[in-house]
Length: 153
Image 1 (cartoon, helix red, strand yellow):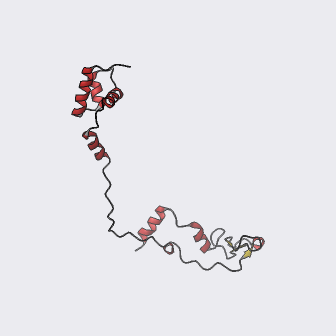
Image 2: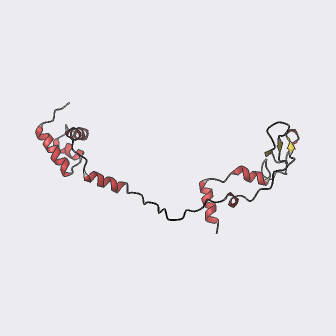
């Protein structure tokens, strides 16, 4: 480890207060000095941060504009906008062992084997009827929701 002379410390303090960067100070002192060494001695000497650095940081990260709390917020989009109203679940349904190809396999009824049933309506899309297919798809991604908002007039 290298010992700093009083002359070097005085130069570092003056250059630091003048606004020179640690890299500039190290370059002026000679090739054996590094930016990290200058930062270390500045820290040990108790020199404060500089206005220049704060100004540069504020230019890099400008403060975000504050939201006007008086501005009305948009109400959430009701789910009916995305999906038409669904009809009531069928009361009877089809028992587990009786469901056939072409019948909706949306589970309805209770959790016990005696109560468990499938919708049983004619399947139009894959394994589900149209209504249960729409219900299984959810509201969509954020991008899809924004696209739908843009299409509404």
